[in-house]
Amino acid sequence: MRVLASAPDKVSRDIYAGYISAIVNAQKSIYITNAYFTPDRDFLKALTEAAENGVDVKMILPSFSDFWLPFRAGRSNYAHLLKSGVKIYEMQGDLLHSKTAVIDGVWSTVGSSNLNLRSFLYDAEVNAVFIGRDIGSQMEEIFYRDMEKSREVTLEQWEKRPFLDRFKESMTLLFRYFL
Image (tube, rainbow, N blue to C red; front, side):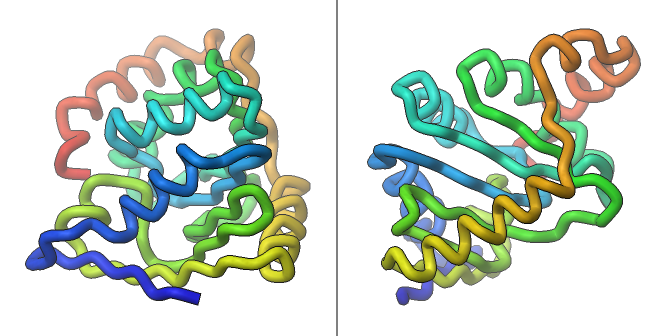
């Protein structure tokens, strides 16, 4: 186990670097659960390239949120992710607040960091990273249990969403850096 932290006064971005390194080096699977998903271009690129290269990329994201701005901003990425082969599931019923990932059943993380610039650059966050198949398989089991409580978002369905939703999502992009 290793503890990674970020803070406003810290020059290195260890949590971000850990995620990017694990995603770029993924061979088999990337399973992410996150409440506030408004990543930067490099993070999105890493995820989409992994999916395009045959890695099974699945994400569980919220179907509603306690803060509408990052929720809508995160959804503005769905079409691009879905077109690249990333599978998106939205948690139903419960307010999603988890921040976990398991990659290739070996690299796992759980912590306070959201997948957004605010967490990576400005907030004091801490994540525990675990290397090992035992914890990796447990994390995958939890991910699949959460998937059972989630609804898959398909590209066909996503492209038919109401104009007002599309407008709200596009407007949030103006504030992405601050989310």
